[in-house]
View 1 (cartoon, rainbow, N blue to C red):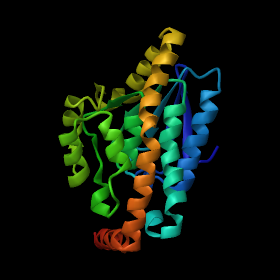
View 2 (tube, one colour):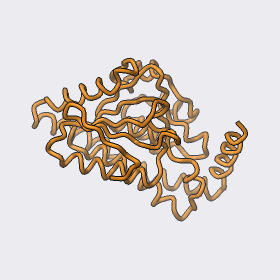
View 3 (spheres, rainbow, N blue to C red):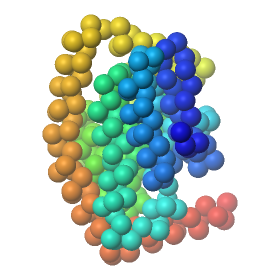
Length: 254
């Protein structure tokens, strides 16, 4: 198992943490591959009742894709890079056991999307979440697709086009967060929810989850193709690179 993910067992539940605390658990290709592989292993482990996704540290669940890695992408690499990241979302959906995300800080872009494709979400009041990719010159296409399964058209447009982050209370009021608890209770509550789902009648649970999976994946390929084309156009124009360079320069001055 790569050290980019860690696994802890709590009451029969596997707590899978993204382990890049210093980088706000941002997604690299290696991290995406590690999460997908861990989910496959845990789903086939009979001793695991459910899975909780969380992040190392207290600042972030996942701040989205790693901007340094994103800056180095070439147009020719976009499809492979984006495909590896999106496979993480797909693998969460394909996991038969309950998958509950425990949001322990910021969940932005790819991190927000991992949360949206999980079965249920638990968070604490300090969490902020949303789809800020447009502000980095990356079209908000896959994210807007996942949001369309949760939110109405107008709110989806607002979140996708402004790139703003919502606080936990707003996300909870919109149903994006299912359980809002204090930070100290976060993992315990997420494990409790995972065990509660694991206790449901097996056939009814599997068929219910499979139906949600079918609905979620029905538009996945179209969103992926549109996302690839949008990012290729942005990178070909130099837009994403220029914005990322500006962001990194500003951060270096702090």
